[in-house]
Length: 334
Image 1 (cartoon, helix red, strand yellow):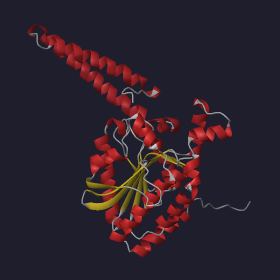
Image 2: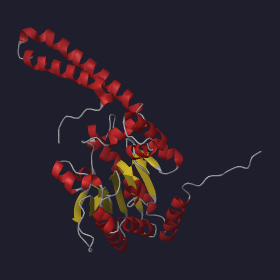
Image 3: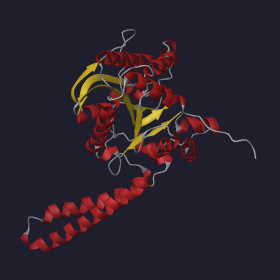
Image 4: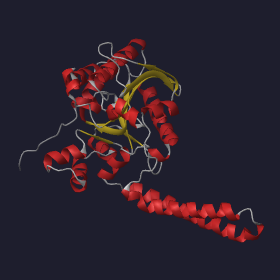
């Protein structure tokens, strides 16, 4: 994977970064020479001024992202994934493999661990970093064995009374012939049914992309949250654009993303999610540890509340939560 990746709306930041780097290079050259002391102080002052300007510009850019720009940020190649969050916010993680029917799917990671003081079953999509890992993980598009593996581990968590945490990051379930032959739609449908019945707390967070049934297959939860610069929708902007305009380009993708109401703020307003977890300024890819801390704080706080609820009430409330989605009132004409 290339180490250099630039979002087009961040070009002014790149120019500032280059100026700051040039000044810091001059400081390193001139600093050892006592005769250049005044010049070094002046350069340091310039660098500090540029850093302040950069911080202000970064805040301004990320406070006004369009829906399509949010999708671009959610797909940033350096954005933290499930295995990154496992490393940053969990202890004693023990990974579990296989669905006991067909095989193991690396696109979904499962295991028991501790997040803060809470023991949990953690399940999440993994897209991969290097090319070989991306191919092995199908770019985060899980096969039916991945969803069956996830359900098997959820049922194990229920047996031992462990709350379940799921991290959603997928453009959608894998659409290939083999996946369909092995029952992709059935595997997701069974997950939706069985997750609605599990008698332990379930929390789900969209950490990047939340596309269609591939996301919902592990997101039937008591509480659903989204990271600030993630997206959650029935279809990707490109898929929507290809259907409506028969062409996916910058213009149609932008229009589709806006119409789909897929950002965290949109989903919060529509009642699809319960909370937006803030990201550090400039997105999770700029400060993975800060994002992991915010995520862990929300998970622990939410689970400690849910653990006090009676299991029967928990299951009934979870069922009603999803039944309410899409309801609307139509008034008779005056």
